[in-house]
Image (cartoon, rainbow, N blue to C red; front, side):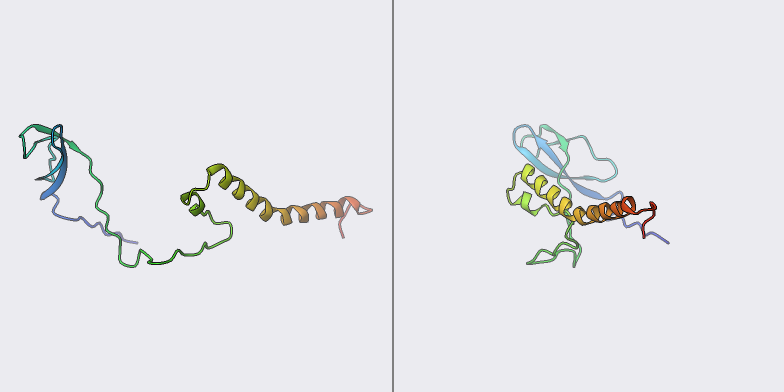
Length: 128
């Protein structure tokens, strides 16, 4: 198996960095990618402004976003947090998840109990 490393932009070319002026707020400046300065002069007042981490540039891949609908859960026990996003209290959501798992596991538990009873009730201790 081979991997391909993709570098976006020149490794030593210019890039946009964000700085925070104490008087005028955040601003962007073009700086060299190889050495991002910790301080940059504000374009309005020339005060040295500290570098700030900015939000990453988000580019979704074509076909990665489905429009207009939410895909159904692949399984009935799949983790679904949509009720939490719609305002359901966490405690109520956890109770519903616990009840869902309890209802899912109940038939398996009954089957194990029945098998155990068969073994215990058999006259020679061996199930038939």
